[in-house]
Amino acid sequence: MLDTNIYRSNPSRNNLNFQAIEKLANAGWLKLHIPYVVEREFQTQQREIYSKDLEKAQSGLSCLSRKQLSPEVLEIINLLKAQLEAESENILLDAEKQLADWAESIDANRYPLCLDQAHTALEAYFHGFPPFKAPKIRDDIPDSFVVQAINKLCLENGDIHLVAGDKKVRDAFSERKSVTVYKDLSDFIESEIIQNELKDIDLLGNIEEIKLALQAYEDECSDISTRISSDVGEAIVGRKISDPSIPDDNNEATIYGYDSADEIEFDFTELAYYGNGQFGFPFSLKTMVSAIYYIYKADYYCMDDGPSVTDHNDHYFEAEDEFEVIVTGAVSITIDRDKINMDEFSECIDQESIAIDEVQSIDLSK
Image (cartoon, rainbow, N blue to C red; front, side, top):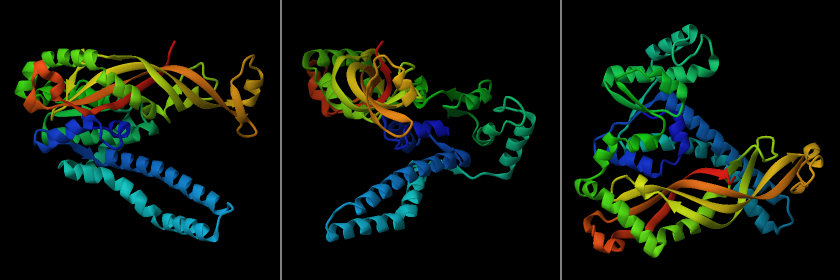
């Protein structure tokens, strides 16, 4: 079972970890359980995100409709706006439906909320049972429903594996022998029991040689670093940098531009196998980025050497600055399992498959 935080970390469920879940489920080795509270919490979060995007789209069309444009173009814009308004609810329903459709595609079990779960969840609330630290803490009520759903799953299915980003949920089962707890999906996928299922016999026997062969391939051709250097910029645009030194109210800046990557490093010793010849391994690099943040005007006037700013509103400036950052993440690469040849290893690699699977962190270079 996965908690809401795990789905939220990759809403499209398209990274290597979720692909591994699909592979295991479709092979009949894994059965995913989705309680009602987890499903609805994720769906409503998605609805909120999509609602904001729709509002931005409507606002953009409204702005265009007030511009000096030909009658024909204005008619098209107004038509688009009307169509978007008419279809907004259908779009939001479709956004909610994506998780249910995905669950059906891998034959996952979805569970409705039952009276017994509601009763035990509220009793836990009144008495301060896990995940509550004390009685009547309202913020933990959704977690209590999740915990009771897991308890019910244990009774019905025996041993289960729980991947929970929420520490309170993990702690509720830390002493339960029938529940194996993981902090994130990569810990679950990289666990011995899962890796043993994903690695076929030939690749398992050659995994150490493949690590060395990948290192030699990169040393000779630099194809992996070339692709990562080319793709990392677009992968980090729009992402936030957080650091106490950034004079934003939230100490955050949003990346909008980037320079070439430098000091690209790969850790082939951490090579993980995800099935179907797909491998992943960590990378890190340095790069200069341009980012914007919002600085309180009174704070700006107190600075000796402030950044370049433009007026944002009565109270804030929009500031632009450059930062050197360290980016870490995971690379994915596919190898033809049917043509493994350590002497001609480059022939086994699907060069088009080399990609950034995910960006895990962006930190200021100290």
